Length: 132
Image (tube, rainbow, N blue to C red; front, side):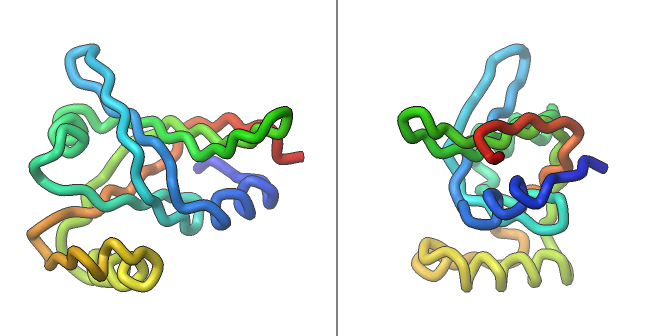
């Protein structure tokens, strides 16, 4: 498992937006999403009818970047890893409760088990800068 420094963890916990990159047949696809970071893993929500979901069903390799650009103070954590889907059960319910409390868009557009999955991103490699 990838180990994050305390500064990386603090940065990841303070932010909630990232970009996720998926690919299918050598065609990349990048989307901005909100995420939740917990214990070395990243979680996002998606819909079944998205390009992101379709790509991840066929190719579990994924990359995300969490970054803030300020002139001469750019900070970022970039992750390469693998994706798993969480569609039902206690993990789904726990994540849904967290997302519901954390993100206003979930309250505006609620969903139930089987209507949209969570994606768990398991880091395999990381790079970061500007967090010293």
